[in-house]
Length: 71
Image 1 (cartoon, rainbow, N blue to C red):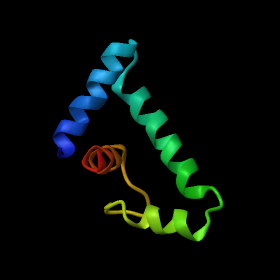
Image 2 (cartoon, rainbow, N blue to C red):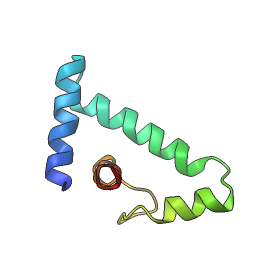
Image 3 (cartoon, rainbow, N blue to C red):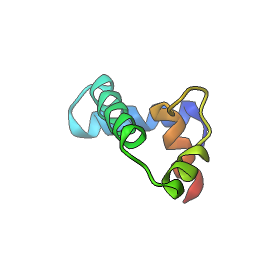
Image 4 (cartoon, rainbow, N blue to C red):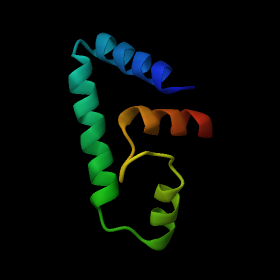
């Protein structure tokens, strides 16, 4: 999977749930922010560091690509 396919997946989720892609992205971004802001133990910080991302936290697309790759 790549970022373009992840974007299409976000669009499909939005369409299926009758919401906008912006709403889906906002929910994913909120979840990611909470995941990376919550107090973490050493193992959690290590696992978070394994998610490839360009910034301090992954984008929704980066997280989706990573998770699908782990399946």
